[in-house]
Amino acid sequence: MIHLAKILPAKLLGIKVVKGNFNLVQGTKKGQKSNRSFKNLGHGLGGFSQPAQIHLYATVTNDRGDEEFEIMVKKDFRSHFRRFSQKILDLIEQEVPINFQVEVRQNNRGDYYYAVAPDDFTAWTDRIKQKL
Image (tube, rainbow, N blue to C red; front, side):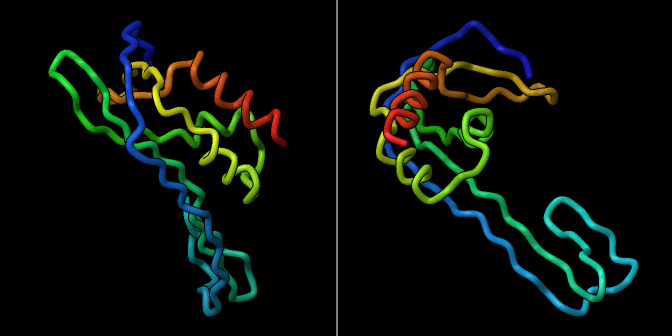
């Protein structure tokens, strides 16, 4: 991940929190391989997991004008909160800032994406930690 020095203003349109899920299944074959969402537990049991996701929908003012974007913020929260309990997820939704700044980043494949600027993200997590 490459950080670019470009910081842009953004306005919140909405937030979507998708809760994680784990389903246990029977009838798993002995040689079935585990992967990112499936784990072979042995004795004919397997588990499908879906991680929690947190998406911000925002209007970002860039050089092309105002554009709507989806910003995924769960990975950023992972360094502050080990587990996402229902209380933490509710506080994330309650304390989301209306106006914030985003930072332009580039991943290893060369694609550009937006992330909440570090100063605004720190202020957001500090407000959540005060209410815990």
